[in-house]
Length: 316
Image 1 (cartoon, rainbow, N blue to C red):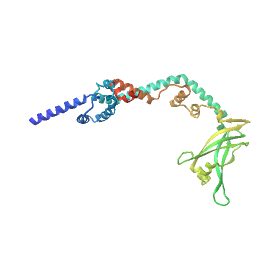
Image 2 (image 1 turned 120 degrees about the vertical axis):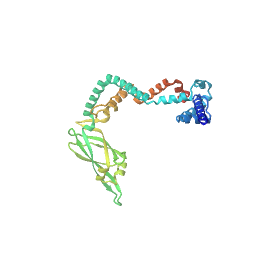
Image 3 (image 1 turned 180 degrees about the vertical axis):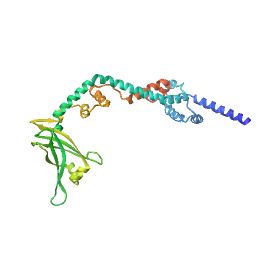
Image 4 (image 1 turned 90 degrees about the vertical axis):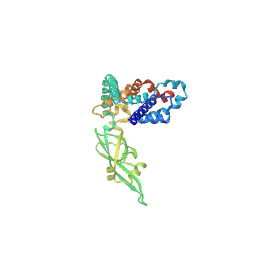
């Protein structure tokens, strides 16, 4: 019976001491026994203690700053941390952030959607009429190699492309091409080609390969190039009915250019144009979440919030 009473008294004392330690203020340094007591009570205290100690010099060397946190206990700070990551709180914050973002997006889209749609329609007509890519198509055809007479080394590589007019005869044009291995999908060489001959049907034209193209192709065959490489073309100019059309003359802003080939615009597409062309103030949801978290945390416990932000506040 005496042993049982002794155990109860001992447990009561331990609980009392732990409670006293919990209520100790963050401005007061813990001794080793107090650290052990708190961590045994709740393992989350370990992170709390490490954080508090990282700020010890700031508050010890500044009495005014220290006075601001004289009423903040370790227990208060732990509870603040727990409340800050509460699942329901974060769920509400994400919902609020999405609502704010949606409201801002809808407001600006209502104002500018008609103008965006009409501008895209106009740019489509301009591109259809003036873009070189609508007047001819280029396909890789083959390569030829010229060897040195005194050994088996490759002296030159000739690259052949098939040019196909798409809207009747053309009087010439130019294009740029990039050589991209399928295995890496990274560009390894590029070159530009120009032709100035009347072309009314699919015709093979050839160009001497520049050094980087030669180095890439000299150990390949036509078949291996077709199997192992992607060749990406950019159409630069075309001469049609005595007029030269250039890709640089289109002057289509990139935010619209990327939308021209889409069947319909997504919310992201519209938002991108709103920001780039109309400087719409639409904060992304993730930034709103960050702002709302700080705002809500400050409401949970202003003193604990200021302590958490101590390094930031002292820098400012």
